[in-house]
Each structure stands twice: as C-alpha cells, then as structure tokens.
Figure 1 (cartoon, rainbow, N blue to C red):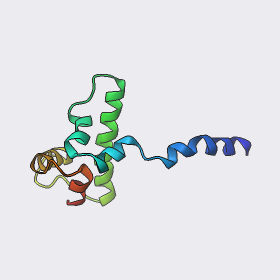
Figure 2: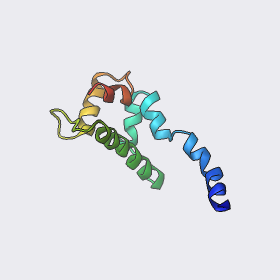
Figure 3: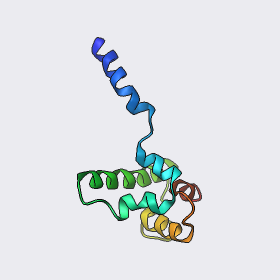
Length: 98
C-alpha cells in the first residue's frame, strides 16, 4: 500500500501536466507542430517526438471514430495540405474541422 501511495505521488506531476506534443498541437501554428513529424531531429528524442506527434493524429482520428483522411491517402497528408492553406491555424483547430 505504501508503494502505491509513493507511486501516485511520484507520477502525479506527469499526469497533471499535458505532454508538450499535445500542447504544440493546440497552441502553436500547425507547421511548427507538424514539423515534429515532417522534419524530426536526427536523434532519439526526434524519433520519439515524431512518434508522439503522429500518434496524436492517429489517436485523434480513433477518438472521433472514423477515417479523417478525406480524399487524401492519410490523415497526415490531409492535415499537411490544410496547414499549407491555413498556416495561422493550430493542428487541433484543423482537426476539429474534419
């Protein structure tokens, strides 16, 4: 029981704070957020960020219960094209429009 209490105390900051990829998708221009996928840093952290950002797109698609790719091959191609048309929007604003 003490172990669970200690674990909850240690893990609580990670649970309370949103991940920076989630924050990027909601708060920065879409091109900056999508750069985690389209232009990752060539190191382990860049690979992890790319996976997290792509996972965000797939998770959002799964949460909505359908295929959000529209007339594109993938959700990534669709959001990238829409970001090029509206670079002032965030990735989340674009996703909410699907």
